[in-house]
Amino acid sequence: MTAPACPVCDGRDVVDLVARARLPVMQNVVWPSRDEALAAPCAPFSLGVCRACGFAFNTRFDAALMVYDPRYDNDVPSAVFTDYYRSIARDLAARHDLHRGPVYDVGCGKGTFLDVLCATVPGARGVGVDPSCSPREADAERPVALLREMFRAELVAERPSLLVCRHVIEHIARPVEFIRAVVEGIRRDPAVPLFFEVPDLDWIIEHEAFWDFCYEHCNYFTRASFVHALERGGVAVASSKTAFGAQYQWAEGVARTSGEPAMVAGVADFVARVTRYAEAEQRRIEGARERLRAAGAAGPCVLWGMATKGVVFANLVDPGGTLLAGGVDVNARKQGQYIPGSGHGIHAPEWLTTLGDREVTVMVMNGNYAGEIRERCAALGVRARFDVP
Ligand SMILES: [Zn+2]
Image (tube, rainbow, N blue to C red; front, side, top):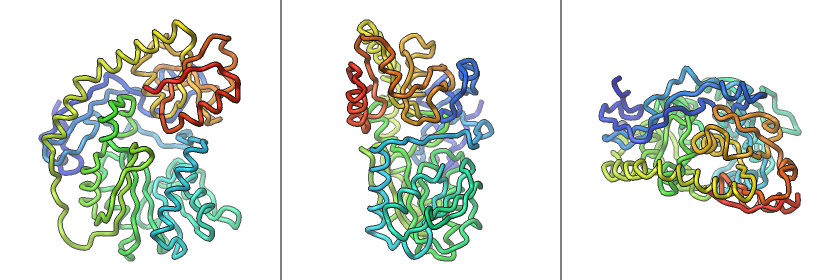
């Protein structure tokens, strides 16, 4: 099989470095029975790095397998996450006049970010576009309209005050073309600020976070390759920085009217870094298994956080479902359901009180929520020890 070309620069010199025999195709779709979860679509994954521009992507990605419909649910109803949304909204409102027109959110999910933004910035309005949302009109109580559509430039019907695209381009097989379509949406008003956010591959590598490689994300951006892809897509990037404990990164700019994007420096060093990561990864997965076995001697082990991280971790570390009693998630729509692939059950936090009186090991899948999770367990009177993989 010939390796596909780099989706950013079309270069052919792509080296495959991090392989998975199978991953659930949609980790944010859960299943009502264990049997259905075990039979959920899975596919091979291989992280390749382009030696010309340093872009990292799943060379085995098949976009035809992806179905973003209303069953797709990546909501995290957590105070920590809402605070994070508020901090983005305040940051944006401090630098841009968000009353000049609606804030467009490309790939808005269920519209939660726009809801928080409009609640944080009085007088702001929002328009969200997402194929998985429930469409609705804006009204006085909730000034956010949602369009159930794949994004295209014509959907930007009114001059935006800001155009936001958060956690989208890592899902899109041809990211540069998609960025171009987003920029096209503000072609009539090239001064409209553009804000992009994606997970940060540098963080994943630094923290050896093997559970952060998932099928839904076909693209993995370093701080350098993020800016490079945006520039190629027609954005003049004015600033970029990390966020959410450096797990995410932001970039902001306007439509580029002239000039050529700069080439990416340090690609050979980056390939060497990913190669070292890949060599150590199997030991790291086995180490996680050992930790669960050791903890399991004292009492049940559970994961907390059954979105991307928990689902991939369970599939890699406990594919047979023998080490983990299950997982906890605060998203009520996921509770009582099963995760794709390994079929672990998803439970409400109260489930922890039913596991007997032995100490429970809670594997906190995202350290950003550790404080919130400890408080919840203490309030429930669960005797727990906490671990972060
Ligand atoms: Zn490339």
